[in-house]
Length: 136
Image: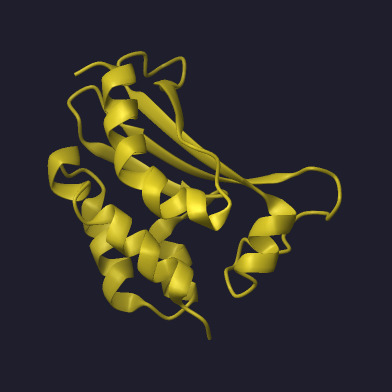
């Protein structure tokens, strides 16, 4: 499956969870220059709106307000369709979950790295949905 096909599949799974939270639909293409066979999916939200909706997350209020900054969820899939990383504004999803006290989902997120996308994709939307509902 090519980068565009992978991007479409991942975006279709995540957009219903993330767009109601102020994220734009997933954008996708090939991974970095040294990873031409990889797919990278980026889902972004305006920093100010994100911070207002999710002030308990470590990525909230991490940038200057009012300048049009954004918060990116970045997922990279290898050429053999394994999950390389899942980061929310430069912090792994695992670490984000740990910082808000959700060790169970953090452990699952750590286990997702290196696993086939077909195994991770069914559980990732639910994990992100639980993350948005957490409040300290």
